[in-house]
Image (tube, rainbow, N blue to C red; front, side, top):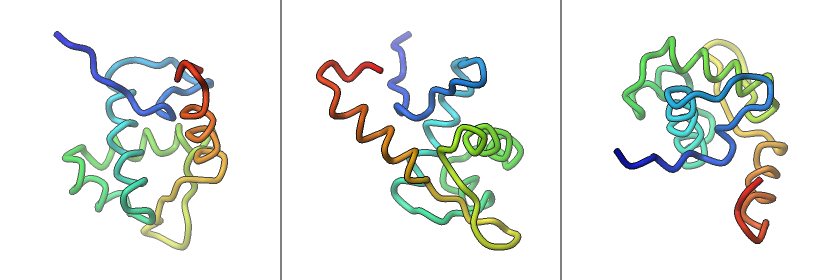
Length: 98
């Protein structure tokens, strides 16, 4: 089975990185890059993931400073400057490895 390429920001430093979580975070981050300001239900529609799986991963990403919620319920989720800086650093590294 070929390995999936995960989003560079899907890797967390505060939690264990397992394949299902990496895959879920990759889908979430990719959706937020294309369309910032999505709600959990919108993310669920776009990715085909359950709302509870998305909420769990968004909280982990928020703890790492990669995403932030805005406004009142339903919250709109966006990538933070820190998350964007991490992606820029990743792509600028010569080997593409952190």
